[in-house]
Image 1 (cartoon, rainbow, N blue to C red):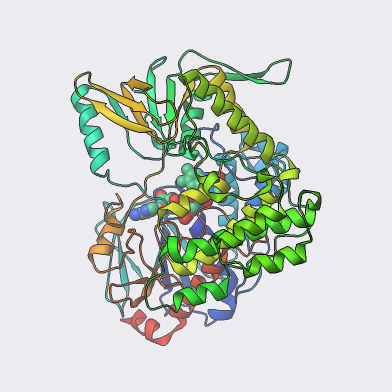
Image 2 (cartoon, rainbow, N blue to C red):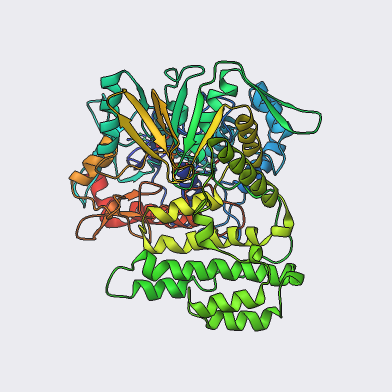
Length: 623
Ligand SMILES: Cc1cc2nc3c(=O)[nH]c(=O)nc-3n(C[C@H](O)[C@H](O)[C@H](O)COP(=O)(O)OP(=O)(O)OC[C@H]3O[C@@H](n4cnc5c(N)ncnc54)[C@H](O)[C@@H]3O)c2cc1C
């Protein structure tokens, strides 16, 4: 790296960011915002971005993907820019949400198909991933342009495989296929969602498939999967009913030439192309994720945090032993969600309650979480059981239900999805929206507790991160057309070596089993630092970085510095995003929600800039 022309004698201070997706984009925005205050000594800055995919959107939001794949967030709920709600030390630099950007962007700045989509986009639309990629690219370019004058930005379309260097000196970032490393004063890993090595079960299934000439697709990013082995008309067992399932369905139906039409009565009808396989699909819950809520909040926001806020997290952290999620944390979360639900019910739908909110609130506050007193209070004050929040029932929607035939299950599942769609678009059920907002609040608080295990993330996604309503309408049409057949709850997949096929059955239709020559695991990989396919992450762990019990990279809550096994924060290495235990919400920040990812980005950007400014760190620049 040569010295900057304005400062011929001083080499630039160098940051290497590995991973150039949304998280890196948000961090660069914060580096630019904080630099005038924290990095004003005139030494030029060099920023190196390493990612095989284009910066801005990175891998998931890259331009070269099917236009049929959508976001599952409404355009007004996605932003890359901070607002006044964000608790931060750095300055506010407002910017448009995806929906606002789509209104402002000039047609000429987009490819024709994206220009048409942007022009038609409303706040409640679900944009294509490609349009979101264009927004992220624009946000990236704007953030780069806001970096201090003289900053140089270098994009490396490469994969980083290793970081080396002493704790107190410059770091080397090694790129695949390159002999010379990048040298950095500080390194940030914004690696995002990573591929995983198959676990023992997946290895056994793959071996079975290889032995019998079957198709087995392990958990992976559906957009990257080779679906050509899933043949027209043939049964495919699909495990998973979340967002990876929705992507799979889209690519195997419209992606293979099928079309939707409106029947005269308004019902959506699927016209197959004949090239679709038949998808036998199940999961533990047996139902698709809840539809995204299709109306906006009116009136007061739920006054949370109340029962699970900073004070409760402080108390949990001050205990000598690590809090147990089920025993110590979940009761507080359940009470918080219930509070949001009943606050909304009492204040907006008082005719469905017995009594006044202040009296209920006082008693609710006094009842221990999960106690019989709390149940009794709710039963007395909320006459209709449908208006009570039952988190267990939500988590086990088909519990105890048995269907006499497979066809009866199809009808039952369609009725379930229709009821969910109707409810999620009906403001009479606005306590659901209050619970959703409380879930976001809880998510923000949980960051300080670090890794709290997988169940919560699954439950959160099931309730709060489901597909757009129109996607569920399509699933209904596909079910009516026979392209999707639901398997039911507690789906079990086995292998039959005698017949050389996969088999699947469920608790919902006792005795019913399907056979197929193809099995798709429709869920995202869940890599641990040990079992990630990412060489960089694995080598980092081998070289001493700490991992949490669930296999996430451990970072300091204050500024996302990577921790070693003694708990010491690395002075020059940082990590942000889903592969760390400070993963915030897995989703994009929503405007005006004090988004945890923004708080982290601000704190990390400031720590980075201080690190570069700091003499002990900078002394080695001349070494
Ligand atoms: C399929 C999918 C759909 C999603 N849809 C939504 C949605 O609709 N709404 C929402 O709110 N959230 C959504 N999310 C969640 C979240 O908002 C996004 O995943 C977001 O992309 C996370 O940003 P990130 O930068 O942390 O990670 P990523 O987007 O995964 O970006 C990380 C980048 O790091 C690069 N990288 C990784 N390892 C290396 C390496 N060793 N060397 C170089 N580069 C490397 C990757 O190529 C990638 O570009 C979705 C997630 C997924 C997986």
